[in-house]
Length: 65
Image 1 (tube, helix red, strand yellow):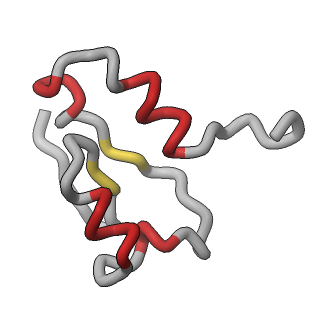
Image 2: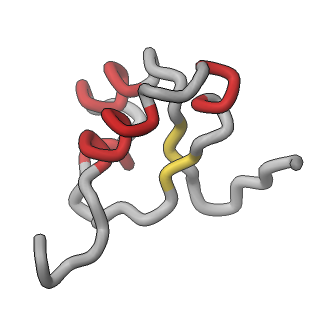
């Protein structure tokens, strides 16, 4: 991990769990390895993650600010 400056999503969500849910819902993870099961909407990991306040961004997605 010292050579790769990107934290794991699990580590990030632990930190973000300290903020309120309204702010959490604004978080979209955008830098995922192509082998990450969260990229597959049908994976078990993705189904579990969808129950959280956070989101996984998808190609072509537009986020209104």
